[in-house]
Length: 165
Image 1 (cartoon, rainbow, N blue to C red):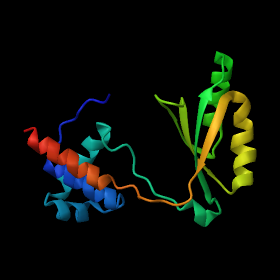
Image 2 (image 1 turned 30 degrees about the vertical axis):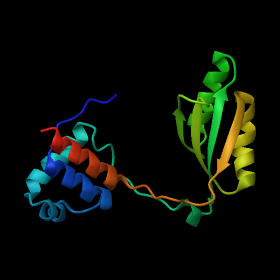
Image 3 (image 1 turned 180 degrees about the vertical axis):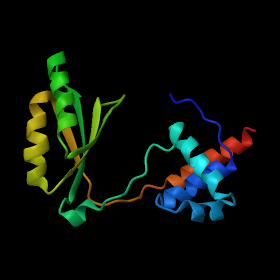
């Protein structure tokens, strides 16, 4: 578990605005949070140094690039350390596997994959994965029900911080 870092209302306001637009100019951000630009800059640097902000990034619509098939794959390790090492190597070397997580539950691993189509998925993910595992289960995403909304969670955490004072 991560160590809980010291935050205040201004830190949470900065994070909220960065969630909307991580490319916002610091002078514009300073106006939005009612701080001077140097103070905003120092706070962002501290949030980066403490690991609260991990990176500034973009969100790509992969379907506009021809990669329309997104799927979750769950799997378990086949018996033997060599196979586990081969499985980890496969996770790390296969660029269609966007995320791989070790879990506690029915499956040891959950993967998020992005492929062109079902044929691409079968040839690049499913078939090479099968000999390294004790079975796989695939759930192809047909539609998105809820978009990622970190602002709502951030608001809950800010309220908990405020209540803890």
